[in-house]
Amino acid sequence: MSDSGDFRAVVEAARTCRRFEEDKPLSMADLEWLVECARLAPSARNAQTLRFTLVGPGQTCNELFSLTRWAGALKDWGGPHPGERPTAFVVILMPEDAGELVRFDVGIAAQTIHLAANSKGWGCCMIQSFDHVAVPKLLQIPSGMKPALVLGLGVAKEIRKVAPMPADGSFAYWRDEQGVHYVPKRGIAELIAARF
Image (cartoon, rainbow, N blue to C red):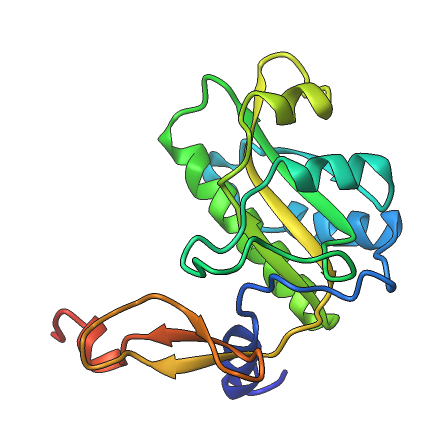
């Protein structure tokens, strides 16, 4: 068993990725491995109601990309440019009539996939800003299900780092002149509400 410091480093490195090595596509087997990791994660009541649509490289991947919106905080950037776009997607599906507990399952599955991807040197972007009408049509989502999150995936092309929260409390992420992506995080002293 490795020490807990190793896992903290994995979590710190698993920042959202928005630029990918488009010439190094992920395979369907890669996507199935990611879903296998999510399959083993906890599920509320162990009901396992989530389903996954896998989109590998090709026309459907390109069409799905066009239905997503990227990095709202980067006002002068319209999303990944050609050559830097995700090479695959995992779409997490939930029942249309799901209760609130299923939303926790979505988060658990998404974070598990995100960490699993990072462990392989792949990047992941969790996207909720997508066309909620066109995506189900494109992907022929089964009746009674709806897409909860779209995960853009590929070999990471950008450097992402954690930064201290600025004095003004702004939580917006930014990029420096070299294109390094910074994500401000609050310090632990600010997060702990009480100790007993």
